[in-house]
Amino acid sequence: MLNRANRGVYGAEHEQFRDSVRRFLEQEFTPNLEQFEEDGKVSRAFWRKAGEAGLLCLTQPEAYGGMGLDFSFNAVVNEEFTYAMMSDCLTLQTDITMPYIYNYGSEEMKQNYLPRLVTGEMVAAIAMTEPGAGSDLQGVRTTAVRDGDHYIINGSKTYITNGQNADLIIVVCKTDPSAGAKGTSLIVVEADMPGFERGRNLDKIGQWSADTSELFFNDVRVPVENRIGDENRGFIYLVSELAQERLSISITAQTAAQRAFDEAVKFVKDRKAFGKMVFDFQNTRFTLADMAARLQVGWAHLDWAIERHVRHELTAEEAAASKLWHTETQWMICDAALQLHGGAGYMNEYPIARIWRDARVRRIYGGTSEIMKELVGRSL
Image 1: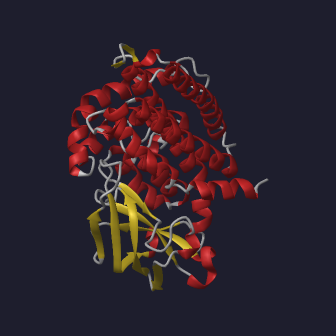
Image 2: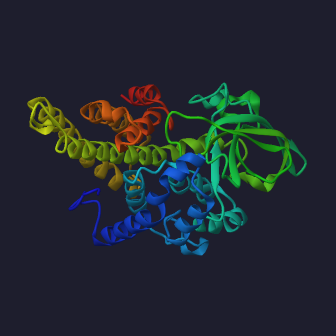
Image 3: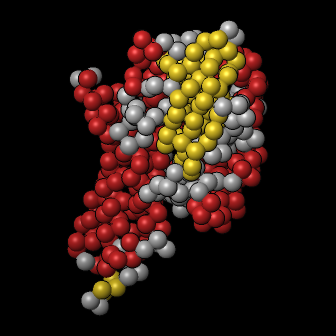
């Protein structure tokens, strides 16, 4: 169990909420984890149950079906979901896709989509990455050509989380290809629109319960009203939301590192070698001590970042530095925790194997570690 008591960023109401999240996961998620991984996605029934439990899009105002809470409650959900070894599919909806519609969409769009995102009736994805364009959004080739009161969208996307489950996809596309990143717009495509096709559910190293897909857009005709915000302002909207996206990833990384550490401590206190517990070897204790120190620092930094974000003070550079440090630290801790398991760590029957393989992608998505270094370096 994740034990982060007496953290200044949380109060009594957060801990009551945390208890309700844990009960929900124990009842609805943990017994189904193996099935979700076998299926390659979390079931739609689980999405709806999470919505009924009030665990999706918590910051939405009551006018759109939400509870009007601040991001600190998102953080609680993030921590508990990750500690339970859930993939990052539901947190993507709460922390990343929904804010684009709420912050930049028209009132009609908000009324149409937000209540259904809150209940889990509708699942959202954001389609940025393409076969030839990852972190560099200037390389996006998917186009949206104006045709009267519609856009005609053509292109393809890949590595899209929630791609199989998604009912709506926020598509990053070029409405003015000659303007580079400044010619980017965000347009909502509904999954039943003619010309939209899902590719295969991609076979990944980890995060097996997250459906990650190729998406294809072949002359998809979309009403102009489905554009989020102004034309050619999409890049600005994307940059504006990156701080929360990267903080969200930092939270999952820190929590997964904590779970890996906890699994390692439990294992070495149970396993014997040369007539004594593995825990009693100095190398084991020194390794765990180093991990514990890094986790202590990580939680303190994370609470600082959450508090700043709740006050709308967390900068893009601070968020980039946070993602860089937490995801790299997660990888170090997860790898060290697996090593302490010895050969058992390489067996999928042990939780550390899942935690380790799920960790790898966090140094890539949301901006690679190399891009994070570049962003921080530019600010110096």
